[in-house]
Image (tube, rainbow over all chains, first blue to last red; front, side, top):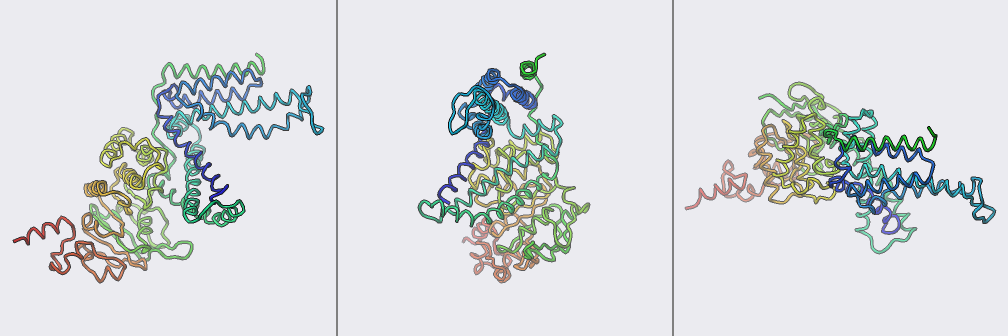
Length: 270
Length: 266
């Protein structure tokens, strides 16, 4: 467990903990942090929708620039934003990569009987870029708004209680799940010596898998009791951080609405 | 005084067949300070969860405030602190965790904000409010958990080992906070040294999960045979003064021991 599996667990847990440290960015002073959480949710989600509508690389790059500008104005470290937003587009790129040789177009290169076309490459680049910008925008919401404020805003925006509940519980349990796994790995490492081989790691991994499942269930049950002890059996109702919607809030909403309309016009025409 | 907790024939058996508590009859009246003691594995935690309405007993029932047997209906009046603070702190910051109870139980944001500030000051959490709970030390987590249960100002406190991993300074502050609580307190602990400081009545849970004794703190804490039979040792002061003082004069707390010694000085 000190080998590949242990390191994987540590890196996944580290990534999840980074989600929690996002609260520190949320507490910073910046453009998005000063917005009413409802406005941030609607406007930034609107920008993400505008990105999903677009079908041209140039427009997508404009949105990428807008996203980076918003991040800069909100004191979000670009490295952190890129680190959070990079994984999903990379996976997407792998999924759509075959389109580079499947779509008809001018052949740019060929090998092993497969021809890479310009249309195929353009599709892969556009798709990956759109996913990347969309994920970066959604990450901006999480990075600039405390999680409880997001949940409160969702409730105020009349999002169904069941959906808000699922989001709230998933967010909390996901972290606890990997925290438990890390504890098991640490307990194991404290009683082992040297670097485990891949085979040894898998063998140990199988051994702890059952224990992990039982411990996770047990911990889930105990945390559930901890929530119920403080009213967690009722629908989530965190205190809102909403304030009066000011001119800057309206301006952001107008920008987001204009982006959606413009993106639609560029794609479908008037 | 009105009974706030009234348990009849309470029993709980876990799915693996372990019977943690059996035939528990316990009535706690308003304003009482009760310590529930017992050896490890005697069923104290299970009893706390059953009394707090957080597990379904396999037999018996608990009536709350003479009104209902549904704990959820009176959840805002029951402050159940679980043994492990990691089970209690699941929000993204300490402040959100302390606010969680008041928010879920429909208390006003302004009141909650005042309580958060006061509790943070009393329990030394000011600089930790915006930190994620998982970044705290064991003692800090425990203090945050205690603050979380006090934040919604429940009528009844049911605290399972609230001093675990807390250093002496903050242990004294938590102790003071519990002593100042304007309501009923049930303290679940295997450590007897603090029991006499905080409770007038002691309930001893036996190894078989039944109530082995339910009497005044003095009657239980000075009964060496009873405690030994249930895997417990009397508090330090009792052990110190056992051969020095008469049974009825044995000091149960450090303060009373000091007073006793001062009284004996020539």
